[in-house]
Image 1: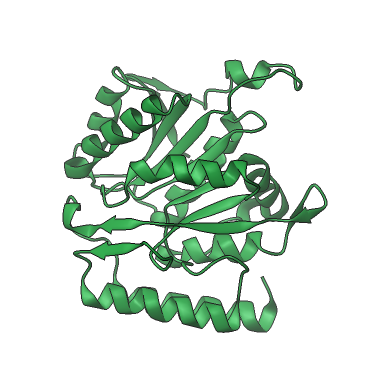
Image 2: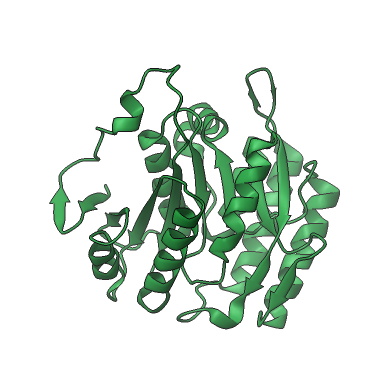
Length: 281
């Protein structure tokens, strides 16, 4: 079970009292942006990312909460998040032991949905400071234009990839073409990027439908798994609409070492596509 931390105070259970959740359904309010950050040993990069996120959303005039899911880090990740909560709307959720990206993502997304009000938007990002917070307003505009999911893409015109090792570039390109051929999703080219914005209604419907199987894949292939599960669902009588915004990926600004094991990720991704192609999502 995760431990929830607000500032420096550890709570025995999730905070369930959210002023925005208590508003009448017809009340006119600005949506809250709920950023979920799975983090494992990201002490070097976390504070610059939190500061950039907070500054970007303040400039845009957007109410927001940043939830750091510390997945059993051995460094000062939890301490940095806790200290940041005194300067900006950051909340820390801790796993007592390292459970992997899939578990941290599941905790972050379900926590965001549990605290959200109708109309809120949930954003997920890597915690290594490679994803530009400045792209979020454009992603939110696309949500307002009718998308349910917006992916920060490396494969849209205007995107750039800086400082990424060759093997990771090749992995991303190969994954793009494998899924484009075998598991195509309209509007999607970048299946593996974890920088996304979700309309909370679409996310909540997916979690309700799949239950504990919502994020069932391990490792980095869990990001693909979420999209494949969402693509077959309907919200308010229509399909979940996905789109992409071109991203400048700044891998040269990455703090700490990469947690991705390339060959393991390839095996997991190929296994996922085989099972989804034969058995369906």
